[in-house]
Amino acid sequence: MPRPERALPVARPQSDTDDDWWWLGVHGGAGVTTLEQAVPGGRDANRAWPVSARSRSVVLVARSSANGIAAAQNAAQQWGSGMVTGVDLLGLVVVADAPGRRPRILQNLVRLVSGAVPRLWEIPWVEPWRLGGSPLENIPKQCAPLVRDLTRLTRPT
Image (tube, rainbow, N blue to C red; front, side, top):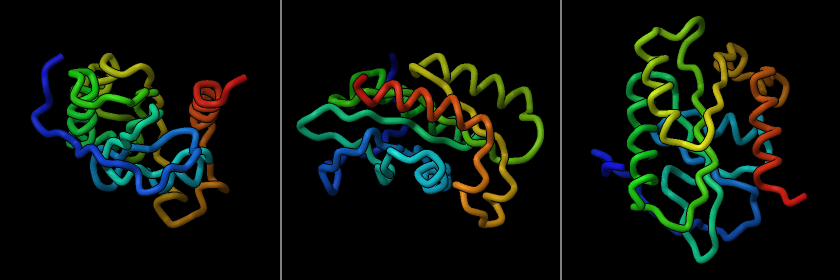
C-alpha cells in the first residue's frame, strides 16, 4: 500500500489504561467526543496513533465530508503501509456531516476507503447531537452494530 500524503503523529498514550479500544479522530471535528459518550469502552487518542509496548485496538473516526474521507484514506494508508506498528486497526466509523442522503461522489469515496480497513460503520446525522443533546439519550439504531462488533472484538469470551 502506498504511503499517505499526510500522516497522523504517533504518540505514547498519556495513561496506560485498560480501555477496550482507542478512538482515533483522523481530523478535527470527526465526532470522537460524541462517540466516546455514546459507545462506552473507548478512549480518545487525541488525533495520534496510540503506540506503546502492548498492542492497541484502534477505531478510526471521520466525518463524511470530502476532507474527512480523504483524512481517513491517509490514515488507512499510513496503517496499511506499515508506518504504524503495534496497532490492531478494528475499522473506520464514518459520521454523517449533514442530514439526508450522501452525494454519490462521497458515497463512492467511502466505499473506496472502506476497502483499506477491516470494517466500516456508518453513523447517520443525529440532529439532537448537533443541538447539544446527550449522546446517551439520542443513540441511533445504527450504533447497535458498532457496539456489538467492538464488544465482540475487544472483550475476550
